[in-house]
Each structure stands twice: as C-alpha cells, then as structure tokens.
Image 1 (cartoon, rainbow over the protein chains, first blue to last red):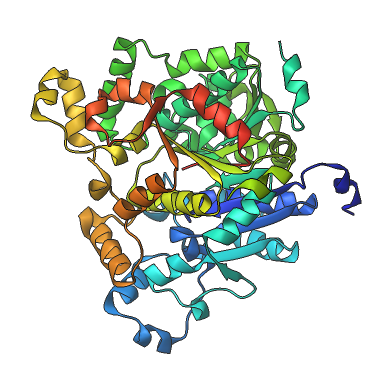
Image 2: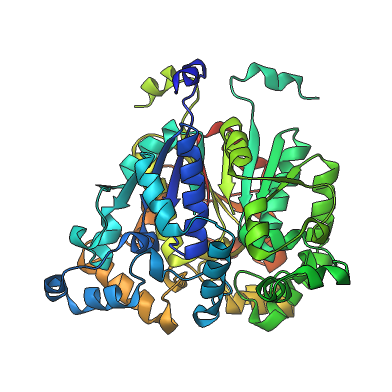
Length: 168
Length: 168
Length: 168
C-alpha cells in the first residue's frame, strides 16, 4: 500500500502539537489526522497543556484522594474527555457547542469521539507530554488507553521527519 | 522568474490552514501569503471553520430563506467578511479593532481587504473546506469569487509539497 | 558539534511565528526552542503582534512622552514582559496563572524567564516584526537586548530552510 512513497526523498507525514484542546480545533486536528493516515502517511499527535484534557476518561474515585488540592482543582475545572470540550468561539454558555453537534449529526459528519476511535484504528500515534501531566497533576490512569508518553525530544524527532508540522 | 528554484531538491511553498478567522490572525496570514507569493513561492490557503467567515460577502436576500433556522442563526451571528472580523484579544467591544485599523491606516499598513485583493492578483490559491460550509450552512453564493472548494485531501496534497505549513 | 547534520539532504531546524503571546503558549514555544537548540538544530523565532509583548522590559520614563495617545494606550494595556503574560484559558482574573506558576515551581519546571535566558545562551535567534512594532508604537528601547529586527521576508527565508514550521 505504501511502496510508491519510497521514491520520494523525504518520507511524508504529519506531526501535530495539540495544545488548545477545544472541540472545534480538536475536530480539525483529527480530520487531518485520519485523512492523512488513510492516505498512508505517518501521523504523530503530541498532546500538551489543555490538549491533554481531550484524552481524559472517568478516573477511579480513589485517584482523587492521591492528588494535592491544586491538582484536584485543576482536574475538576478542566473539561474531562472529548464530550466536555468547549468551542474556541461562539460557545455561548454551551449553546454554540450544542448547535454545532446537532448540525454535525444531522449532516452525518463524524463526531470527535468517532474520529478518535478511527485515528487509533488507522495507527495514528498519540503521545502525551509528561511535563504537562506533571504540572496539572494528571495521572496515566485518567487517560484513555493505547497512548504513549513522551517529551519535547520525541516531538522534535517526529517533526524533523515529517513535512507537515502544525501547532493546533 | 522562478528558474533558480529548480536547483533545490524540494519545491518551496507555503500551505496554511486558516481556522480562527480573527482580524489579527488574518492579517498575519495574508502578510505571509502575499510575501511568499511575491517571492515566487507557491501559496495555498485552506479556509475552514471560523476562517470561512473572512470570505463572506453580502448574500442575496432570497438565500436566507433557503436556510434552516440553525443555519440562519449561524449566518447571523458569525462575522460577515473581512470588515467585520474581531480581534483575538483586546477587542474591547470593538474599540481595540477600531484603534488597530486607525493606526494601520495612519502608518500606511495595507488593510486586510487590500491584502486579500493582492493575494488574488499574486495567484495565491484560496480553497474553502466544503465540510465546514455544510456544517455552518454557508452556500457558495455567500462567498467571494475566485476561490476553490475542497476537503482535507487537497490540503494534505499541498502540505506534503510545501516546506512551510502553518495552522492559523 | 554539528558536523553529522551535513549528511542529511535538508538541514533540519525549527522556525516559529510567535503571535499570541500568552504565558502557556510561550512556555510551549520556548520548551520547543530550547529542546531543539540543545539537539543542535537551528531555531528561529519570529515575534509578531501580541507576541512582541513577551519581549518588553521596563522602558525609560522619557519614552512614553514620545508616543502618541493611542500608542501609549496600547503600551499601557498590553502585558509588559514574560512576568505579566496571561493564560490563553483558565486565567480566572490571574488565579489560574498564579496556580500554574506555583505548580511549576513546586515541580521544578523551568520558568518562562529562565527559558528565555536559556534560549539566548543556546543561540536561538529571536527576531521581532518591525511592522507590528510600528503599528503598536513599540520602540527598540522597550525590548530586551540581543534580538534582531526583521519582516516577513526573513521569516520566509528561515521557514523555507527548516523542516518544522509552527504558528503559535
């Protein structure tokens, strides 16, 4: 499937920093990711800062007790998982987001949850920045399965190999 | 004009995703676009989500009647065209934007409207994401002339060809 | 130190547009910059629009008198230097920023001020967009030492040479 790529001097691929973690930007990122992966390109997504919230799942109750007060506050105030992300604009207290999701469903546009699943099946690499996790007090048990953990060096390795690099 | 570029192993060019659609980010995008095009580089701009609003013009009255209620709401609430875009910060209810435009005029900095015109004359390619148009209910008649329509595949083709890729 | 890089067909490096100038985005940018520079990559950062504020220092009193009213207003309202930058989200009137800095200190994460110093020592090139300075009325005396001044052409030259290009 990917043999004709060997003719090119530089292997093509997409490396993205997922920083903002808003619903609309996340949709754009995963549409690019799944599109590129289905065109047989290497895709590496590095989740950092607010972006990490998009990968959160329901954490066990006992975990909260291990956190400091500030860590628990961060965890409580930041959106938990793709279903809770806000829009970067026109959020209007949740109305904008509700309308966007409604229109997407009506017009058969794939939801963010489905896009994340599709990305995993298409072997998109998802790496979470351990420094961000450390600062915000997010533990591995709070994040979805099938992801990797790394730092800026892994990002730079990947970015230097891929022609397309985006900060989203 | 561009013959000395043939020595390089990879053709140079700029591919941008125009996502946010705010006045200040749009100015940055079009300054880069016109700068690159005048240096004889290939420039491809992909307008998606809120970015599409920067390409809206006055639409015929009859069009509004064809829209659903939600589509009409989106159309009414989102800025229509470059003159209506807000700043990403220091908007202050329109005051920041007014002051910025005033200073730009005073200091002979090209306006966004003029930059868009210049971009077209310099053969900058403007492609609008059809999925975004579909979700927000924006029709071709509502957008300026001389633009193309496409999806993520056209973006990836272009990004893979260009050394500079930006998400704005 | 950098001789083995000559084997690669394209010199690797990182070119960034620093547009937003928020504390969290600035941290991400300088973590990437110092990481890349310590891996012996060329790093060029182009500060434009709100990003310029991160490079402001205490300016001499006499300077303010040379400014027009609008320029003085911009200078007064925009954050002055890395210590005054806000977060792109969860700012909560300064509380979020305070908590973030507290957690960073507690967990021994390098502060933005230290990252900027480290970047300079690692020969990261910092260029400020003169057009932005002109529009906002910012003078060279107001910015930190050891930086360069340029326009879109310097950015494009750099971006065309580097594999990694980001708009932050």
